[in-house]
Amino acid sequence: MNILVTGANGQLGNEMRIVSQNTTDHYIFTDVNQVEGLETTFLDITDMDAIRKMVKENDVKAIVNCAAWTNVDACETDEKLAALAEKLNADAPENLAKAMKEIDGLLIQISTDYVFGKEPYNVPCNPDQKGTPTGVYGTTKLHGEQKIMATGCDYVIIRTAWLYSEFGKNFCKTMLNLTATKPQLKVVFDQCGTPTYALDLANSIITILDKVKAAKSKDEYVGVYHFSNEGVCSWYDFTQMIARIAGHTECDILPCYSLEYPSPVTRPAYSVLDKRTIKETFGVKVPYWVDSLEKCIANLKQMYITERV
Image 1 (tube, rainbow, N blue to C red):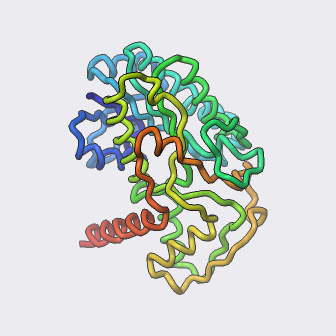
Image 2 (image 1 turned 45 degrees about the vertical axis):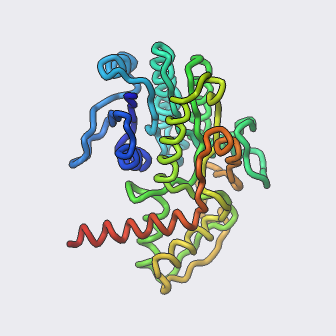
Image 3 (image 1 turned 120 degrees about the horizontal axis):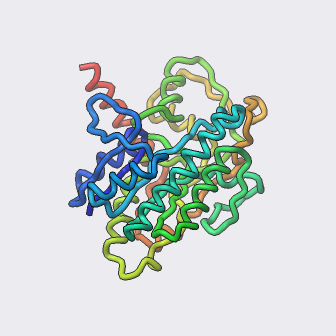
């Protein structure tokens, strides 16, 4: 099967490049940004005609949409960036969904825990819960979900949270640097969720694609699902574990309240995701968050050694 990956030069897209090497499917990796050393086909997913052309010329049967506008604070304070977020997070996924509807293909859309947040939770959010976003980013991602559903295409929407990897900018890499170079850090402890190693999410997508190919009916898989690693922690806990695994013992990490770091948007205070449905439907394996963090940091250390050599 020919599978198109959009946003292929981001965190998840790079992990998809790795895991796709162990499959028999043919992947076409696309992005609007080119990165030296990565084979990437240019595709602007806000251009419906370009999408149709790409799908037709490559006989694409499924799309994995890893592209998104993710600068949460910027789109909250700038109207032009808010409009761009709506274009990339809502209108563009609708274009991809329409393209798949036209050929009876599948769209796998990556969404976010930011579709929740306005209502206080103290139990994991399930996929059927009503979206209650607190800001522009979460609202645009929820709009994207709704627009995809309205097209009537075959879709699998995966909400994830606290994504990190060896690639790009993310919390794990930032904290690895800060705990190695700063004598003291203050990190919020009143926001709880679960980190997601992008490699684990990419592996789950491969599992889902295999299940879809074997399915007798779309009723077996079409829907909204949640994926993050297992467990729960605060950003403070996450930072403590990053430093511990990396051996950064000199940095004094202190807990603080979110109010000490004012932000234009209110982030979800509790966004642990209920993953029972994705495990039951697709047989997806979900590693514990600390185990995955250890693997990522080990890979980052090896990448650093290789680059130094």
